Length: 412
Image (cartoon, rainbow, N blue to C red):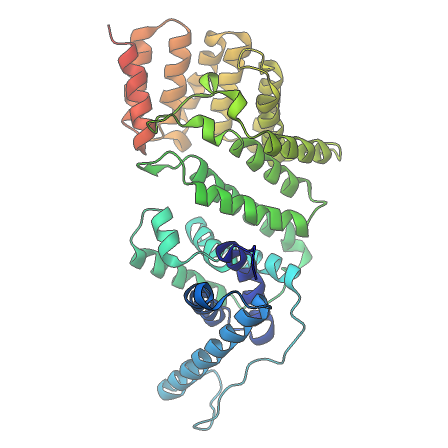
């Protein structure tokens, strides 16, 4: 079919196809492998043969055939090893569960909850979400997180085994668990976005494919749960933050701080959409952490200039966010906002207690904020030392270059 981007289409269909298979046959681990092979077949065949009239049905058919092969192979292995939960006569195949209706939308939500199972560590939740729901290959995920393909393969395999061992059927968690599990889903999507927007390691500042994938998945979640304020808030936060992405990077790949960015190059449609989303969410009352962060991003994005920013309002929002979340990174951001609203010394005074917070141990952010506020306060020598200390603590090459350059500007 003309006018459709195959890669876009495959990523959109991946969770629907996986959901259809798992709902119909169970066997999440093997079904996920089968779907990946179907996606690979599509990537190989569609460019020359063309996109089928019913691409979802094509993928489900190919994946179901492969799943059948995998199930037969797995059953044969279990019989040979005599470890099956129930013994079967030789040659008899354990048939898949009875078919049940395979509607698309709820299946994607269920998959997100499965991938963010509380038994999994955050790194495994992220990897499994990107593969099962995002449709990314293991190689793509490994490349994005700068780990060997073998390492990522083992991580995903262990994650699928843990989900299977949990005994969770293909259904949403019971009501008492739903809120906590949704919080885990939102956290995973947030982590994917932040790693894409500000990479913690490697040669580049951003990994646009990760932030774009996080936005795409959060849009799906918002479509499924439109009345949830935190889902709306997270989508707004991503849009309002990502709107500034292109202005953050100079022609040589260098970091451009917020105060020096060309605001005319910010993505106005994304800002408009983000502002509309967060305005609607806040009107419902009782804002959560993602809504407050989105509100802060909106104040930044709507300001005509860095100097015209309502820093007092941002400081107040950070104070409320800190009261809700007790997050040391939020405390650092609040210190910057207070410094901009009331002078650098006021911000520096807030940094003192944070030096003892073990959650910031080894993190470059505390020294980077201290350096910035010391520079604003006219303490060049102390600021230079703090910039150098911060540079030594980050593994991001663009961050290292930026911090070392700031220190060099203050050299006597």
